[in-house]
Amino acid sequence: MAAPVLAKRKRPCNPSSSSSSSSCRDPKRHRPITPAPCMLEKHDDAAEAAPSPSQSQPLLPGLPDHLAQLCLAPLPPRLLHAVCRPWRRLLYAPSFPPFLSLYALLEDAGDGHAASFAAYDPIAARWDALPAPPMPSPPPTLWHPSFLSRRLPLQCVAAAGRLVLVAGSTQSLRPALPRPLVFDPAAPRWLVGPRIPLAPRRWCAAGAARGRVFVAGGVGAGYDLAVARSGASWDPAAPSAAWEAAPPLRDGRFSRDAADAVCSGGKVCMGGRAPPRRPPDTGDTIFLVDEEHGALNAYDRETDRWRTVAEAERLKGALEMAAGGGRVCVVADGGKKVVVVDVTTPKATTTRRNSSSRSTSAPRMWEVEAPEGRRIVSLHVLPRMTRPE
Image (cartoon, rainbow, N blue to C red):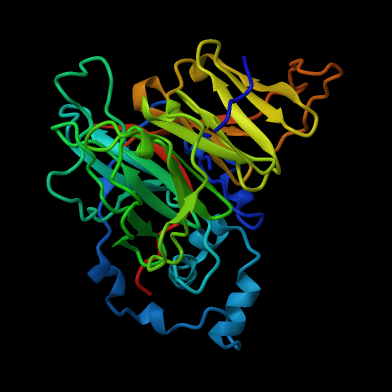
């Protein structure tokens, strides 16, 4: 399998920080023998915010709450969730360090035109619906009669702890998003970013590096070489800031189809189907799924070597992937489930340049079912959503 070319690709069940990486240790919680369908729940803010006797209880008797938070922060999120309601509420408070969750673009299994967003909470083991984004009119679509065998891309990027929608196509095959739409899990709500330079685009290369969103190439309302060769970056943490232009590309090759980009070794690399992913906590290691053979491979740019991390039947036909917190999550079975691979196990060694090797011990794997009646289109790793205190 060839190394990724000039550009990019996608926490597993619980790709969280060191304080929460242990919270995903029980794969049986996510892979029952007879898995029940995962329901997509809508969080009741009013119910959560309703006062109760337990809300007046201190987090730790004898300590003010701000000191108690410092004492509780190092504990595994799953433990905090299981002990008592005050600790559970603290786990989702804006002031408390967040664990990582999976964010997915979903399509209705019966009507592929209906797109929605949801977040999987690995601690509560449930999917929560995101607020509907403020889509422009006409909105982006995932299917078109002219493309019976393929889905139209709605390109999303995870950057600066936010989910950013950067490009899509309308039913008339025109660019659907003149401005990026940004979901901030800490709010949690959608924001509208500044206009994309030159013109709205679709079928571009999109990715994230160092907390910034990158777009390159693409097609506007019609083909324009200036748009096809253009590139720009933007910081979603500063929504009022403008896009910054990047040096033009040598040609318009990245205007023919949507492409994901991953940053490694100071370079932005492009990928195609099931593009590569580089978790922020693995240095320059890039993960890539060989969907034909069901193999998860890791590429280390410093040593210029590929190694096989895991190989399993359930990884065959992989559609998408996300990585973070020592986990790699692979969308499989036509978008009906996510296979989570623990990549924190010891690495295998290789002796030849550009050669592949297999890990001596197979990493742990478990599965997360998609919400009932939905299919996962794309997957991202971001901090969990906050809830009313």
